Picture 1 (tube, rainbow, N blue to C red):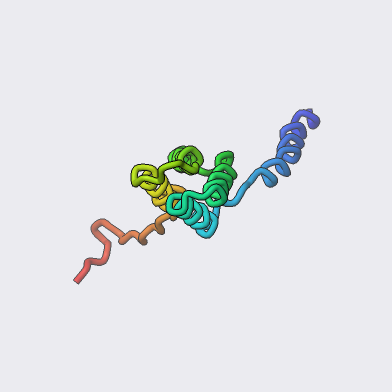
Picture 2: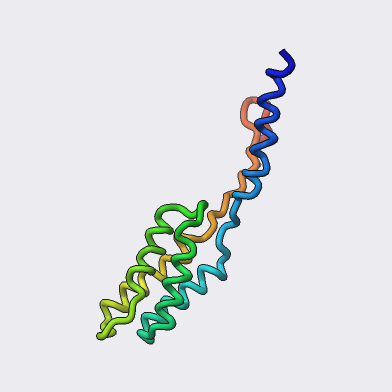
Length: 129
C-alpha cells in the first residue's frame, strides 16, 4: 500500500527537471528591435547581407515555444519578404516595413495589469466624502 503512494511522488520528481530545462525566456526588446532594424535595412538597401540577416534573425524565433501565433505570422512575413529584388519598388519596401513595424508590438512580452485594491462595499463600508 505504501508503494502505491510513492509512485506519484516519484513521477513528479522525475518530471520536475524536465520542466525547468524547457522554460525559455521571452525575446528581449533589443532582440526584436535588431530584427526590425535589419528588415528596414533590407528594405532600404536591397542588399543580400541585410536581407539574409533579417531572415536568419526572424527564423531563429519561429520555433520559440512562448511566442503567440500572431507573432510567428509576422516573423514568417519577414522571412518570406526579406529577399533581394531586381526592382526595389515601394510595394516591396512597404511589405517588409509593415511586417517589421508590427514585430515590436505583436511580439513584445505581455505586461500584466496590476489589480487595483478594491474598496469595501456594503452597509458598514466607509463612504467617500
